[in-house]
Image 1 (tube, protein in one colour):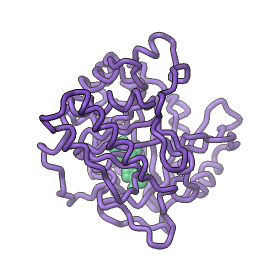
Image 2 (image 1 turned 90 degrees about the vertical axis):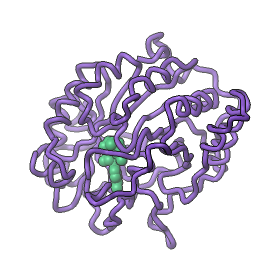
Image 3 (image 1 turned 45 degrees about the vertical axis):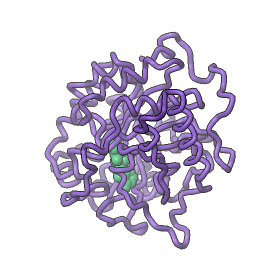
Image 4 (image 1 turned 180 degrees about the vertical axis):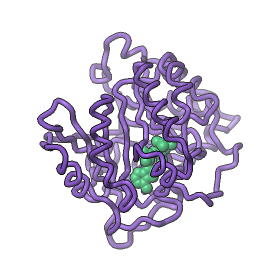
Length: 350
Ligand SMILES: C[S@@+](CC[C@H](N)C(=O)[O-])C[C@H]1O[C@@H](n2cnc3c(N)ncnc32)[C@H](O)[C@@H]1O
């Protein structure tokens, strides 16, 4: 638990920064997504093909000190949530140390993590003790054979153990992210929701985006938010909840509640107007959007021996503001001339 949470305080009561991170469309940025590595043990068909080899060389990854420098600069500028992701964040040997050091910052942000869950059983307790607040675990199927076909690995049991460990460690809510792929797991949508209700997971279905390294995405084949709601409605009664705010998921009450299910319609009903996110890649590039064509390089300022701590923080802030200032109104998917980003999701940080 962060110091803030322990004190029973919430981010909302903190005084706002004098000069927050605002883009050209008036969107205030409060959510920093930090990719700890581009590596992952899984090969999800919609993310990383088996033959992918274009890994970042180890020396290009930011060190824990460098990551902390960026986070410590961003927090006084109004960042209230830091989400650790990747690649697979739990592949970083220093992941517990990184969590602990973020939690020890003055006015520590909420710390969340998106993980495939494979190493969570062994790490959840240490992560929670270090200050991790909550996790999103990716799980697309409850069938071991479908899991193997969708991820290239026979590891469903490890993910389920990881989810149990997250709950036991008090990481709440335990969120589960599921991507439905046509002809592969879409029929499992109701079973995933049924299991989520039993386990107390907060389940969200995410529309597949054109971010796979294999460039196999097609809008026609994608299982849309509307399709997902229809699949779930065959087994449950869904009532839409109002207003998603800056949260990407549209929430639905399941069978009258109190349980809910979320559907993230990134492609068919984008939520860019409420975007409050900025991303840091594992090799020190700031991106205003998953789909940005431009990256702002923090490495020269993080590794400039001529800068003292104050000078470095000013320089990091300038790069963050520059990247946020360049944000477009929307991700542009579906518009004429849309080109997917050069890097796959695993290298940007999901
Ligand atoms: C890229 S992963 C990184 C974190 C971690 N390895 C994990 O599995 O959760 C983050 C999330 O992105 C989702 N994802 C990956 N590729 C996607 C795509 N093309 N469209 C939508 N979601 C995607 C994954 O399902 C996962 O929930």
